Every structure is written in C-alpha cells, then in structure tokens.
Image 1 (tube, rainbow, N blue to C red):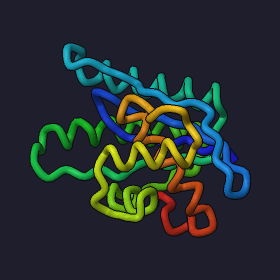
Image 2: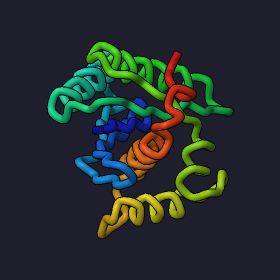
Image 3: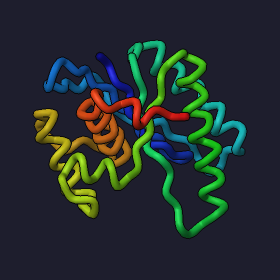
Length: 164
C-alpha cells in the first residue's frame, strides 16, 4: 500500500509518500509545495491544487493521511490555511482517494510516545523509523512523513480516522 501524507499549509505544504508492507515502511518521496505571500490567494490555492494533482498522478497513492488544523491565535491565518487544506482535500477526493485525518497530538503520541514531543524529537524518530541517513528537511516534509507513518501504523483501525 502507498500512503500520501500531507502536512497542510498555505505558504508551505508538506507531502510524503511511503510504501507499506506489513510492518515495514519505505520512503518513496517527500518534499514541499511552496507558495508566496506576493501571490494572491486564488493563485496560491490553484498552485497547491495543481501540485497535489501532479503528485497524485505521478505516485498513485492508495490512501491519504492529513493532519487536522490547530490554531489558537491568528484567525486570518487559520482561515487562509483552512482554504488551502480544503483545496488539498479536494484534490485527493477528486482523484478518488480515501482521506484520513489525525490531530497533531495523535501524530506526536503515535510517533514518539509523548504528546508534547519537540520538533527535534519527532524528526529524529521519523529518521529512525524510516532508516534515513539524515533528518528529513524541511520540517513540513518531516511532518508529512510522520503523518504517513501514523496512518500506516493505524491501518487496522483506519475507519476511526476516515474523514467524514
């Protein structure tokens, strides 16, 4: 099974693909989709949508895992990132993919065993779980890998996390 993990964003969207065979996880590719604040919102959303479709067309994932949004301060930023997440979900849905969502706490707890793990702890654990030589960069790509891993480890319970 191939899983596409998405760390949603507007300026930076992290994406990662892993292949899962039993308890073995193999990284296929990971990276970011980047948009710029000098572009208007519709242009940025279009760029994200088109990039997501391209990634899906190239790598043909079987399922998608995406992180739920968590904001407690800037409402304007939350709305804009919400628009971007909607576009990311739409691209996956239009490609016929099942989408599963996980909270940041679930991701941290599943990956490190501690819900308040630091970015560094998360990245180090992802590196070790995937037998990578280096910590994956940038942070958003490492987060997308973590989201892919949590979905892979939750496959037998995946119906609980299915986006509704």
